[in-house]
Image (cartoon, rainbow, N blue to C red):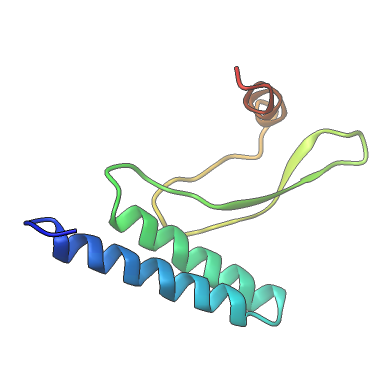
Length: 94
């Protein structure tokens, strides 16, 4: 892991380790969501695209719904009428 990308790679690995430690230490949903939000921001900083992390669940009717989503990272996922169809296609690998 040498060369000109070594400092960036080291910073990325450090950010992932920090996120993993924060996730492992989270004792409440609030702490877990804060750690996930921080992880989304960290991923976005090392990526050329916006990032979002979300927690999914099922509605009583069996459709996918977003239970929680990161507020940082640049990507906002809408839980609208199109989301269940998108999720079904993504789940099938389409």
